[in-house]
Image (cartoon, rainbow, N blue to C red):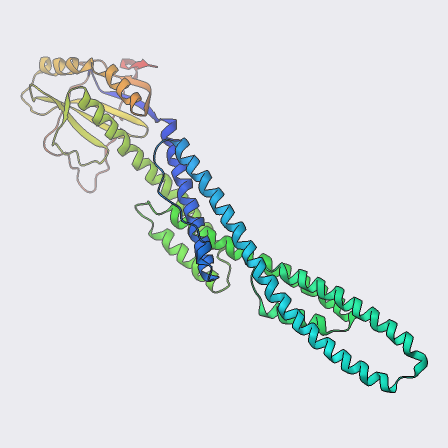
Length: 393
């Protein structure tokens, strides 16, 4: 390669889509985990869902697997709610019927007692009043049954309150029924919020499962979990955990991208006849490559800030300008094949910055380029001679 070069790049869109689809798969697994925990708490583990094998392949394949898992989870939710509704209805009907039977027995006893003492002339009036009360009581019982059946989670407190509605006189029962309905709605909102929060905790936990550093996220999720178990609001911890997840994911994606691009550069140069040199540049996004033949020169590759930096270097001090120029020109012809090899492997080259051969003297490198601990790492190509650059689109 002639002088130092910089190849701007972007990761292929398909790779990005596949990464995003896998992140969605992990989030779905969190929802599956939360659903399974709920099933276990309800002693209905047979209704839980298994996520299946981790999908592999193109983004379309992974997206299809996500869609199938979403359908499976939605169907499982429907089955669970249907089973819970049937159980609630059976329990509530049994409890209310017992109360109504008790009230009927009391009223029957009271009617027998009243029959002995009331005047004969008032018989028809009292009988009509009893019929009205019986009809009202039946209507109230039906409404109580519907209200209790809408409960998302069982509540002994609200069921006791419902029994009080049935035992109250009709006028007061209507007022108590309205209050019961409001309390059930409030309880359902709290229950649904707890279910949603549990889903968020498990979702974030699964999304963060592949992060190299998830310590702060784990700490925040533990705090959210404790708040949820203590009937406190986990929203602050969940918000912080979600923000930390986004920040850490972006940081690690950049590092992962650099490692991926350097791997592609390595594969491409090896394909073009280079070999990886054991010389250590002590930077994870850099490598040294040599061709067969004279071992006086090499090529360094550095991936940083969306650019692949390529530079011819000397591996020995015993070279002259002619040797340097020949080494640069010898490798110059590999630039176009390298660009095509990068594109074929999912790294899309953009603008190419190139300095003509002979403008700069190749740097001498030895077995290591370790810098003092207090020194800041140098950036490849910091000083650029714009008038000598050659641009390719």
